[in-house]
Structures are given as C-alpha cells and as structure tokens.
Length: 298
Ligand code: CAA
Ligand code: NAD
Image 1: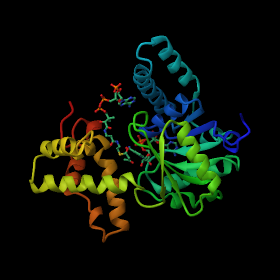
Image 2: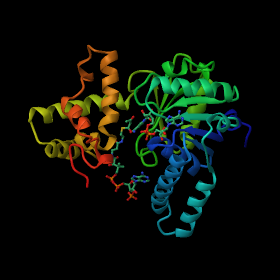
Image 3: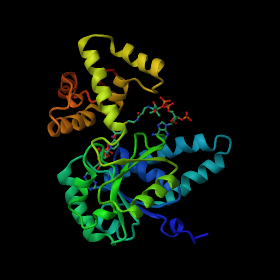
Image 4: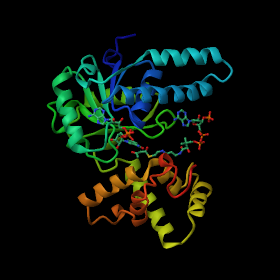
C-alpha cells in the first residue's frame, strides 16, 4: 500500500513552532490524526499552558466523537497526547521533521530570525510553512535557501473545529511541495482550498474589510452592535455577527492586520482602520480574551 508516490512521501513528523492559540490547535489536530508532533515555544511554562489547553480541547473533541463510548474517548485522548512532544529548542526539534508549521508572533523580523535558524538546522527535504494571517509567504520565505519547499498553511480559530485550511503557493513553491501540503491538509481532516500569495488569502481578504465596514456602521449609529450582529446571524446565516467575531478574534490581532495592509496599500478604502477599535485597544478592551470588547464577557 506504500507504492503510490503520495504514500511514500507522506508527512509523518510535524514540528509546530509557537504554542499559542493557533500553534496549540495545529499541534493538537496533527496528533489527533496520527502524526508525530513536536511543539516548540520559548519557555517550558508556556508549553505547559499549551498542553493544558490541548488537554481541555481534546476532551471536548472526544466527547463529540465518542459520545456513547467513554473508554474509546479516553484512548483517543491518551493516544493523541502520547504523539505530542514539547521542546524549547527549535533547532533540535526540526532534525527529523517532514514538515515545520510556524505559528509564532505576527512580526516579519522575528519570523525571519526563526526561519534563518531553521533553514540551517533542518534536513533539506523538510517543508517549511507559515500560518501567518497577513504577511506575504514569499516575503517570509525569502531568507531561506528552500523557497521551493516553502508555502502557506493558514488555519482558522478554533483549529479543532474550523474545517478549512488555506494552502498558499508562492511563485517559487514547487508542485511537489504544494501536493504534499494538500495531502497533509486532507490527512489533518481539513478541507483544503488553494490561494495565491495575496494579502489575507481568501478568508481574511474578505472577512477583515467586512468586519471593518460593520464597525463603521456601528460608529455612524446606523444600528446597534446587537442589531448588526443579529442581522448577519439571522439574515445571512453567519455563526457569529461581525462585532462578536471581532471580539472573538481580538482587536489587537485584527487591528494589526488592517494597519499593516493600510500602510502597504494606502489607497485601498477597504483597508482603512477603525477609530473605535483604536480606542478599545487603548482601553485594554481587546475582546473575549480580556473580558471586554464591543461586549462584556465577565
Ligand atoms: N476545541 C474543541 N472543540 C471546540 C472548541 C475548541 N477550542 N471550541 C468549540 N468547540 C466545540 C464545542 O465543544 C461544541 O461541540 P458540540 O457541538 O459537540 O457541543 C462546538 O464546537 C460548538 O461550540 P459552542 O457550543 O461552544 O459554541 P458555538 O456553537 O457558538 O460555536 C464556534 C463556536 C465554533 C467558535 C462558532 O461560533 C463559529 O464558528 N464562529 C466563527 C469562528 C470564525 O469565524 N473563525 C475564524 C476567525 S478568522 C481566523 O481565524 C483567521 C485569522 O487569521 C485571524
Ligand atoms: P499567540 O500570541 O497566541 O501565540 C504565539 C506564540 O509564539 C506565543 O506562545 C509565543 O511565546 C511564541 N513565540 C514567539 N516567538 C517565538 C519564537 N521565536 N520561537 C518559538 N515561539 C515563539 O498567537 P496566535 O494567535 O497563535 O498567532 C500565531 C500566528 O498565527 C500569527 O502569525 C497569526 O497571524 C496567525 N493566525 C492567527 C489567528 C488568530 O485568530 N489568532 C488565525 C490564523 C492565523
């Protein structure tokens, strides 16, 4: 059964760099789906927290998958945990990796520093991918000598629940690398779509301006926050309204994205940051994670 090219080249060992919100989710799903996973972050304390978050999420997933079979659910949790190692040394963690998925802080200089190090440490066959929300994949890859084995793998929050994976090809991404990323996405249980290396790929390119426009509507007083959210949930079938979703994503995260695009593309009216969001950020109201944004969560 290992005769086909895809089975021979299948990605088995995955290293995820960054054990925050996204990296923890990516590592969890990779472990759940039978991969050998190493999760890397800068400190053991952070990684301990990542493991705790993964344990909570695994329990939720097990409850759903093995509703009437708690023993099988328990086995699923333990098997997944046993496939997940942690490490604070990125260089040693990529030595046997077939694939590295980077999910560290959204900062080009910091990502460059990491990928320079990884490029030296990883075998030449290792595929590199970034989970960036808003930076160019080609811009990130440019500091490595493996731009043909580099692509975008963009997941969505919460990773264990959201079914989509955006697979991003740059001008340099090889066909083989692209196929391997698509195969891996399927093995992760995700539905893959392909996108060129453009700002925000598909989802954020549409979602970020949509949320900003909803906030402008709220700023003008056209409708209340509640009514805008109710409208889009019941009138357009979205699971969350745009202001709820902005609170959920975090105002620091989405503001950073739109501000970056606004600087790069100042003439695009879709990329104009919102004044009310700047005010929320100044007040420390970043959304669900701080207990308050457009709404209160405490
Ligand atoms: N881990 C495991 N399971 C989870 C989970 C997690 N972190 N979060 C939720 N779930 C499960 C719950 O256990 C629950 O399972 P059951 O159906 O068996 O009860 C199910 O998901 C639904 O959860 P809830 O009942 O708590 O709440 P909900 O029905 O409102 O769903 C939601 C929550 C899935 C987040 C849903 O509201 C939703 O899809 N919201 C939109 C999310 C979205 O748009 N995400 C993309 C943001 S943009 C992005 O990520 C890109 C970027 O670059 C910024
Ligand atoms: P986060 O702040 O929750 O986690 C980032 C983690 O990276 C932190 O634990 C931090 O300690 C660690 N880190 C920073 N520098 C590091 C380094 N040099 N080596 C190892 N670890 C390092 O951030 P997040 O929300 O998980 O986002 C991570 C990436 O995913 C970003 O590029 C972001 O744009 C992207 N993304 C975010 C979302 C979202 O909704 N939050 C969705 C899709 C993609």
